[in-house]
Length: 234
Image (cartoon, rainbow, N blue to C red; front, side):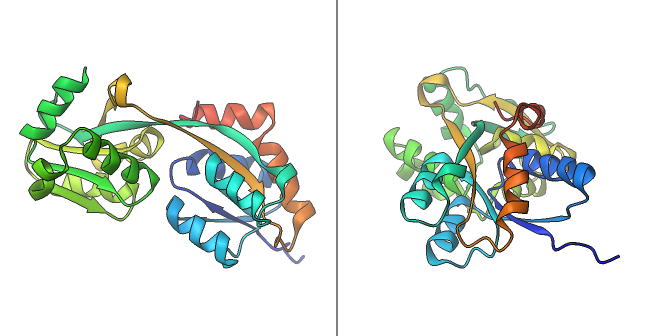
């Protein structure tokens, strides 16, 4: 028996556990295989906009999905929110615990840290802008480390033996890498915190739209919602 072609999914890293679990549930029910490619939100935006996404389904921040729909890259009627993800603070297991209970204590902790680590994805872009608003960019320049993606933040924290490194990432991404030896400290102080809504949609260039649409429908169903909530999406 010839296996049907796989549904191709291009997904941002933060919601990818829920995306994969939904795709696995769909595969169990229908026998439909899938392939997931993970990319940063800026890279997804670049590839979708240039027509080089090579996927049927895309999962990205809601604001980007709305842009894709307006530009004709994603079918507007298929764009649906799957939930929001909170930006958090992560440290190495066993490291000293910085105080992030308020903006003031958070600022002091950053100034006292050995290094400050964030990524080039949308969450890292927010951190860079936040540091600028807090007038910390220049003060932290010598110890700021920018890595490629969310996973690389945790990997860098584990590699560094110092006790006062502070990293940032989406909470779902942080929790997914607990096995590396890092620990979620908590969300950013409320006054400067961020929740990013994510959405799913069907690319207009999809080669198997009807098959892919069934997976999109599952992702936005009540069953899909439960799957995403279990992965840390709220």
